[in-house]
Amino acid sequence: MRRTFVALLAAAAVLATAACGDSSDGASDPAPGQPDKVNAGVIAILDVAPIYLGKQQGFFSERDIDLTLTTAQGGAAIVPAVLSGEYQFGFSNSISLLLATSQNAGLKVVCNGNNSTGVDGQDFAGLFVKADSPIQSPKDLAGRTVAANTLKNIVDTSVRASVKKDGGDPAAVKFVELPFPQQVAALDAGQVDAIFVVEPFQQAAVDAGARKIASSYVDTAPDLTVAMYFTSTKLLGENPDLVARFTEAMKESLAYADAHSDEVRDVIGTYTQIAPEVRAKMTLPKWPTEINTASVDALAEAAVADGLLTRKPDVAGLLP
Amino acid sequence: MVAVAARAPRVTGRPVALGVLGLAVFALALEVGPRAGLVPIRYAPPTSQILVTLGEQVGRSAFWVALLDTLRTWAEGLLIAVVAGIVVGVLLGSVPFLRAATATTVEFLRPIPSVALIPLVIVLYGPTIRSTLVLVVYAAFWQVLIQVMHGVADVDPVARDTARSYGLGAWARIRYVVWPTALPYVVTGVRLATSVALILTITGQLVIGSPGLGKEIDNAQQSDAVRVVYALILVTGLLGVLANLATRFVERRVLAWHPAIRREEVTPA
Image (cartoon, rainbow over all chains, first blue to last red; front, side, top):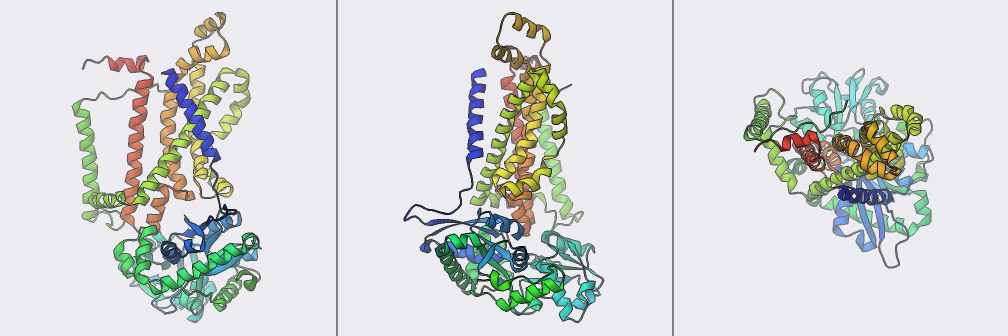
């Protein structure tokens, strides 16, 4: 018995050392002739379907990129990981990138992410109220409470844009932070007056009988660039060739996704748990290959107007 | 002061049958409640739907990868905590000077909830297995350490003095006097640490996003897949049950010589 225990101790010690020693091996300096190992940080939402589809289609491997996709819980976790070099590329919404840039984070956008459909009432995100709510249009939200998944970010900025467009006072809208999965239930229970949800929760809101009063991403700017792929200025300086190849592969992926919506709905099932019947009917974003620079500029100005930023960040320096 | 090898129930037909019956009634209540409209069926799916969903999950390779990641994080964290807890515990327990010097520090560090370290490990290691491992080790370590220190303190002074007067060296005294006394305490510490380590493993994955079942639960929640959330929670519960059975088994094997266990072994079959 004692011998067994000593053996167990030894095994434990070995394991402990192994556990401490396994560092996350990133890209950089592959053996000659070997593809570059690239780690990209994404969020498990439909917006990033093109990169999964592009990987499946071999758009990255044919450019000597061995792509690993890691899901994080939000852009807030991805930006520091890209800066530290744990991920070579990341996906984040445009406002988060503008906020990071205003702090001189050393980020550089490499490619477009996804855009609103540009069609009012038929976007992949929307502002909802209860069916019997007295709120008829966004301007009625003055003095009301709206749920946003993250405060001081793209959701409240967009909802304010809807209110402003409707002739209301955006400063009079109150926001409360609530994760997407809890919003429909909170609306039902009357804890909030309105919610802003993206797919698949838009389908849940529709199923619960909620009424859509605005497509806020559409109201923010025509064909708004909601999110983008980015890297660190450090990697761009050290390995511009890798960044160029990734960008090319990414653009091919975006174009492919935009043209093959059935395959997009299938690939979403591989990295999320969204039910097949929901995947079939949800509204997909648009995936243009080029960034809508004017819309990012509009977001930067809105962020200043709403007080998220004190000074307009260097949009041209952030974008490629 | 410390429950040494709590008595295992005698395994006869009746308690097992009763246990299964209790579980069945519980499952039935969860089946009927949502269907009768007592709780909203959308947020509390009935048992049968959860089981069907669990069956679907078992067919996904992502499920097995997550399960292995969870087991790996759990086992590694537990091993590190147990080894460190035993080594440090024996050391602090046998050297009065060290024990006195560290007592305040231990009592200061021990109550800090492991989850309070989450912001720290995210900055240090990001959403990796290592982050969760730190939480697991931190939480499980104290469970073992405290038990071991109590165990070492429990050594019969006569036995200790006898060993000393017979000229046994430090190592021999630890091995033949301290260790047998402390072993029941160590085993209890390991059993406590096992469940604490599982809790922190799932918590870390859920909150930090390191790979494993906890992260899959979060992914399911973000996908509005309520049934999947319940199915995965069920799996984590099963892990806890299995862990408990395993530690009880080990306890009986390791402490077969101990009076507390031996008493039961002689019960007529």
